[in-house]
Length: 463
Image (cartoon, rainbow, N blue to C red; front, top):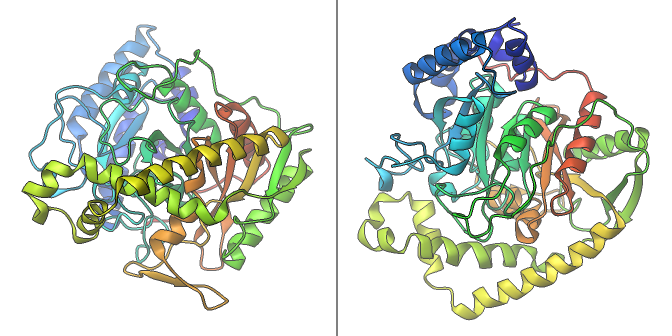
């Protein structure tokens, strides 16, 4: 096994015990980037020399007994919305050409302090306003979409071009590409991970979180990222928590909500079958299944778009007026549509969210988590704009991709996407676990228990 193939936890243990050096690991990942980038285009920029210098420093620190913890010497990719001092933050857009960050974002600073090593900035759908990341190819099939908007981060992790990466999630943008590329994606509770220094799409829906090979890896990264920062108005004042799950896989006493409504409507048959098998595995590990009804389903999509569209347009108001031609056509159309939405529509979406949060809180008193598909289909072919379901209904790809993930953004609850197999075309399928606010430890425990009961997953077989 090459070092780039190691999970974060395995690499961290090898570095801690001096069986692997940060230099060896970073060199292996950079070599892998050179090998797969011509096929995948996951990165906006790769900072190879900077990464090698940081790896040599991490190796010196380890030799001197200054081991920083499980992220010491671990190569990471950051979505190109996340500021790193002195580096461009382009948001994969011509609008940001020439931009360089004056200082680190909170999450970049925390990763740096924990010893993580930046290897590059990963592609996003322009300004995170889309679900496909069209410039990046799916790690399992280059003719299919990566998912978005954190497509570059998910593809980098799935292909071994990063040991872990950070993404952002406004309507599913961590979980969707994680599911479509066969990796783990965690959207934390709203406000748990600070967003200072991260380009916003929609400030009341935005989250930052990890994309990793395993659930344990996600827990390690979340532990480093979480914590209050007064520079983010939504940041929660929560105590420091070690989110890493224990070694056990017994789920006795935990209640898993199985939706009767919404989450299994208009879902590909192979996706539904794989997710239901995974839920049955949770039951076999001791969890109790409880059927539930998802509230206010007819308002979910309207609420998501009613919040996101006007907030995104407000954020881009100046550049939309001065350099509109520099936006990609799909993003410009959405931003211009936001100018047509009235204050009444936005306020109604706010009221709808308040009601939805209350109703979800009541459901999550009855169950510990809700288990459902992450995305209703596997990755579509590049360029496809619609999906036709078995009953003849036609849905846009963007609506289909966001449909099952957006409730967690509207309500702010944590959500974890875990790989649960592949369809007959070899494309990955994800199961989503949704929990109570600040309930990440329960989500991660359940996801880890499921993962431990499965065969080890391989990286995507990139040519």
